Image 1 (cartoon, one colour):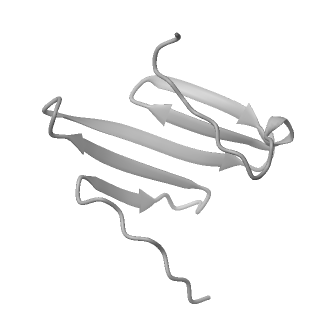
Image 2 (cartoon, helix red, strand yellow):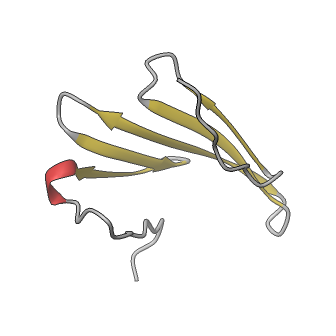
Length: 78
């Protein structure tokens, strides 16, 4: 399969994990002078999406998603 993907910002470095259902990234924040670990995966068995920033994790089932729309993930509650 030949695919063309958009380029990532120079402050973001990612790699695909061996199972090919997860991506792990290191995001550099020059403003905060800090790096963050970000993890995104799809669990085929539980049919869910997992998003993790550092130690904060968010899980959403695929059945609960409204396809074609975006959602936001916050580390703090407003």
